[in-house]
Length: 314
Ligand SMILES: Nc1ncnc2c1ncn2[C@@H]1O[C@H](COP(=O)(O)OP(=O)(O)O)[C@@H](O)[C@H]1O
Ligand SMILES: [Mg+2]
Image (cartoon, rainbow, N blue to C red; front, side, top):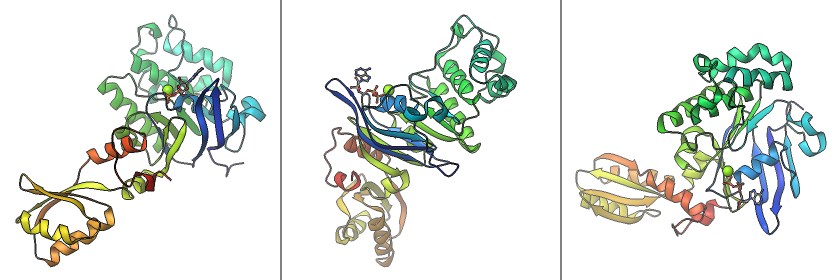
C-alpha cells in the first residue's frame, strides 16, 4: 500500500448529541504535504484529528491512513503515523528522557536507541534529565514531537502545535516543523492562525462549523481571490484613469498619493501591461497582506461580506 494517500477521509461525521462537531469532511493529504487544517475555535479540528488517530469513533464516514482504516485495522492502521491532540501527556515527576524511555518500551523497544537522536532534533538534549513538571509549554510540545518521532513516522498529525506558545516558542516550533518536512515527513497540522498556515503549508483545508469550506493549494486559493493592491506611480491620477478602464479592476481610489484597487491576479497582470502602454512608470505594485486575513474571515463566516467568496468556497 505504499502508493496510498497519507490521509483520506470520506464523509467523516462526528455527532455529540445534537452537536455535529464534524459534518461530512472529505480530506486528502498527499505525500510530502505540509497540510494546514485551518479553522476558528470550535470548528472541529481536534475532533477530526482524534478520529484520524483512532482515538474516537466516527459517527459515520471513513478515515484512512496510508489506505488503512483505524476502525477496521485498529492499531495496525497507525503504522508510520504519529501525533497528538490538544497537547501531549507526560509524567511530570519524571524527566523528559525517562518519559521517552517509557514510551519506547511500551510502543517499540527498538526505538529506545533513537531517544538521543530525537531529543537532539527537538533541541531538548540539555534539558532531557530535568523533570517534565518544570518544562515550559513549548518544551512540552517539543517533547511531544520527540515522542512522535520515536515511531519514525511517515505522517505526523499535530493539533495546534504553536497555540499557547510565546513568540519565540512559536518560531522554534515552526522551524521544527519545517525541518521535519525537509526530512520527507508528511505533516498535517491544525491551526486557527492564517498567517501560520500561509507560512508553513503548501496545501490547506479550511473548516468552519464542521464543514470544509475550501481545500486545495494555498497558492490557488490566493490566486482565485480578489486581493487589494497598492500602486505607486509618478502620476497617480493618470494611473487611476487607466485602472478605471481595466475590466476586473475594482474599488479604484487614490489615497495618500497611491492608487488602491482590488483585482484577481490575471487582471493585475493585464493592468501592468496597460500602464506600460500608457507610458505610466510605476515604482511599486504591492498586494496587501490584510486581504488574505479577510479571505479567511470570509470563508469562516467572519465579518467580511465580500462578493465572490462563494467562488472559492465550492
Ligand atoms: N467530547 C465532546 N462532547 C461534546 N461536544 C464536543 C466534544 N468534543 C468536541 N465537542 C464540540 O464539537 C465542536 C468542535 O470541537 P473541536 O473539534 O474541539 O474544535 P476545534 O479543535 O476546531 O477548536 C465544538 O462545538 C465542541 O464543543
Ligand atoms: Mg482544538
